[in-house]
Length: 102
Image (cartoon, rainbow, N blue to C red; front, top):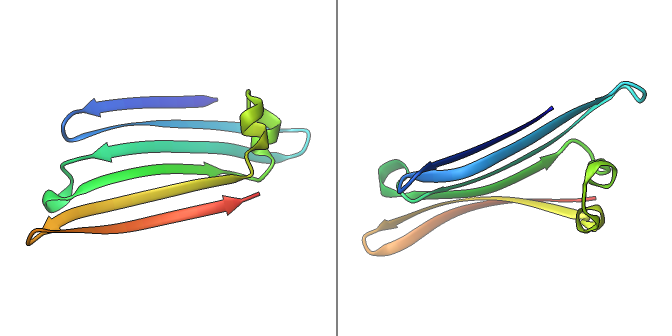
């Protein structure tokens, strides 16, 4: 099964989420793909929050199930999240980034 969701509550938040799940009975394993993107200009206490999250259950999921050759060749996925807020005229940001190489 697959699930896809889109939200747009401008100017507060907008984004999308996509997920798929595959149970391979012949190999007796469960595989999944989760992707989400969010952009919130008005987050907690006057901050903004942006994220782009990608997660795969294993390193061969893309080669086995991707519909385009470009995704088959992709050997790295990157997820990131950023929270920013201006305090006393200075912009402050906290950034988290996760890279997974196959």
